[in-house]
Length: 241
Ligand code: UDP
Image (tube, rainbow, N blue to C red; front, side, top):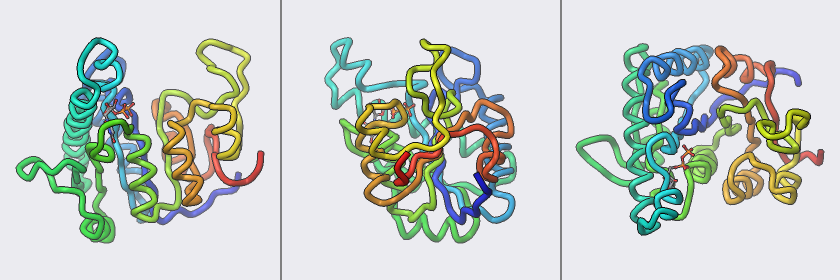
């Protein structure tokens, strides 16, 4: 794919990315490396929104399976994303990157509430804006929160940084001969129930014509490469596959 110029993107990071090689929680050393990658990605004036998950700390569904009320679990999951957002903000500011955290659940003494126009102003001033607490509603995921914010903030693309380097026809961890797609349509992802993001998130991106770029954030330097149109990734867009 030829390199294309993005003006503003949304980077979605799963909570598990912050664990580094730990089985749980936040690895500050790994978060620092992530901050350096984000810093490098911003060189050249790219405006960057970040949505961070919470799965490294708490998942509502998993807790519900063990008997906790689902909505309570989901609110706990959303609070976990705020912890992750603060950890990433801290690492980014240490790296010299001005950052604001905005939470969908207002908590005035911790961070700003989500205000779209204010977020817009931060981006114009070159600050990274981390959107925490997903959509602010139970029964949703941070993937959907990412698609929603990408649409609201008029992002050119949603970059989903995970542990896998793209979208495969089958789970590559279970099937070694699984094939990775270079490019795939939203419709195919939805009709074949491929594991990219949850269906609500994919449908929101389809409706708003926001391409999704799925890539491995664990590979060092990959964010910059993928932004330049290089590196291994899968592009999900409206073009029929
Ligand atoms: N969550 C929610 N509403 C949202 C976003 C997140 O209820 O809009 C809760 C939900 O319980 C979820 C948890 O927060 O399991 C952590 O988010 P997610 O699983 O999306 O994190 P990731 O998998 O990206 O680490």
